[in-house]
Image (cartoon, rainbow, N blue to C red):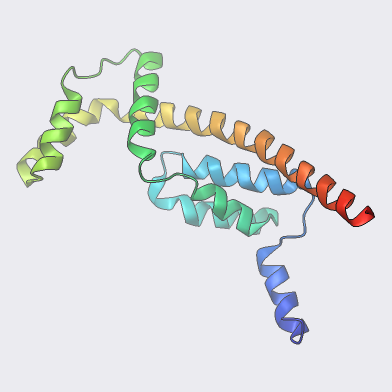
Length: 162
């Protein structure tokens, strides 16, 4: 890209990677927030929209958004829903895990409908628990990434001096 300065400038403008450590950590934390929020289908669009609106590092936001690995999500959302139910005083059906296994083993329309009826009372528990969980995870992500970014920059500065 050194031979194409306009292309490099366009890439820099699009990705916005030359930020301070705090802004980069904030961008990553914003991505983590959306990645673990209850708005799972909209997480990429919302993360990028806010990254452009706030002029944040788009790469850091996307890395944060996609830190929600597929094998992490089911236990995370179950735990978040249980926490939300405990806060709201909603009772979780005793055989919810068995119902989920049954539907996943043979997904038919009738079972999906029954599962939907069983999960409907947990909607607000899911929303509250997921929002609280995404706030906690984004707080941790901000501080952890800020520490790593600053350490990396100190190391790079030390290397250039010697």
